[in-house]
Amino acid sequence: MKVEIAYESRVEVFDTDRFTESQPFSGKSMLADFELRYGNAETDGIWLSAHCYAANEAYRTDGNEVPEARREKGWRFQLASPKEASCIESVSMDGSAVLARLYGELVDIAKVDRVAALFVGGGGSVSWRIRRANDYLANSDEALSASTALMARAIGIAPSTLEEVLSAEAAQEEPLGSEEDNWMEGFDDD
Image (cartoon, rainbow, N blue to C red; front, top):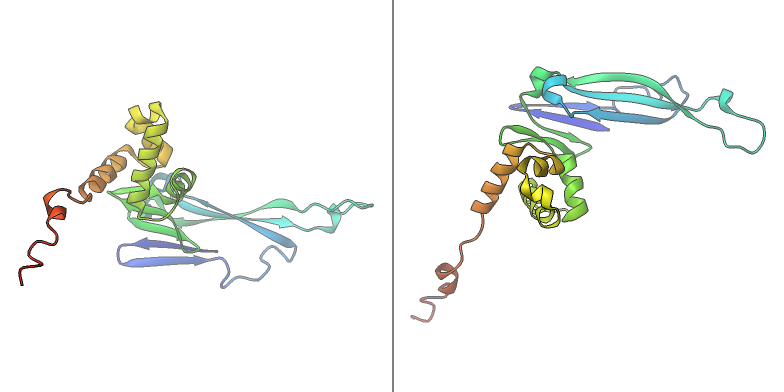
């Protein structure tokens, strides 16, 4: 797994596959469990925890039962301190965006993507997916429609970010009317 944290004028890359032993858990690990914690990045920092599932002969039993490999606690690594987190532009994991700074706020892009996938599908910019999710949820849930704070929480962003996105997206709409009606004006004047 690779985690990239982009700051203004630098990128840090954390790679769990490089520069470590192939079996970092004393040769008994059959499955690694990685957890990236970023929910309160600007107060707690960003942490990567690594645990293993130990395939241990002591877990075998007589008979036909399949032995269990049990999770064992590993280590956690601070990838960004709270001070560093305040300067983060984006965080990606294996090439997929997890966090990004949008209108001054760190946005949980992974949650936005999950919400969009559930209700409106993927594709488009992050801003577009936020607007589409807002529109869909506003049409389907009266409580969300009535509260910017509830809507923002449902999408995974701050209320101020939702307001900025909706304003910016509305400004991008194509003007209708005379500009489209006269698009061939002067074509036959030759």
